[in-house]
Length: 212
Image (cartoon, rainbow, N blue to C red; front, side):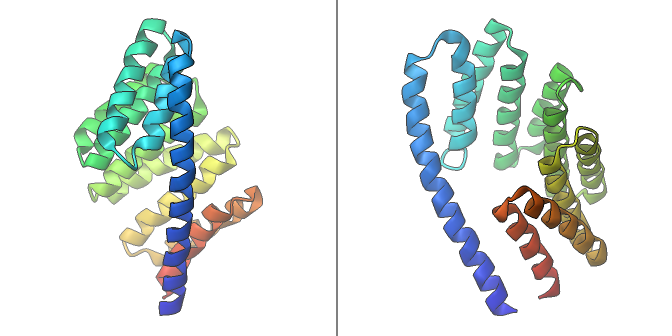
């Protein structure tokens, strides 16, 4: 059991290192692209930078997102606006400012409504994550389930896998291990179907953590 956990930890550590290296190259390329970009394209690039850089600097992530929000409002680009709000909400989330995170996610949802089902599912998922951090697992599960239902309707299998895994987490934290395993298995099966090795490994690792 101990060796299983060590292998899982080592696997995630190597994966994290590789992702961090790839992100660094992408960030450098986007910064160069930003300098040459037309005004109407800057918000999208700034949002990408905000998302990629948050693991290195939440302050920088917030600055990029706020710049993206300002530009997208001037350009009246709704897609870039909600992405900026989402990124700002994520910064507050990772800082532990959960009330502020919820405000940003709510504004984003009111801005886009149900027009973009993929993005609506992402917002429901993030709200679920906030309530999970607050220890309100029942409320978290409700938002994860809302995300799941949207993904099922829109046949968004990647989103379904994420939602199943997250619902499994709420079951795990409430010691409903039988249900947790069922949700993790559903997530792993979809990830395998999609060829997402990392996602399948994460769900399988979650199952293993219950048994061992």
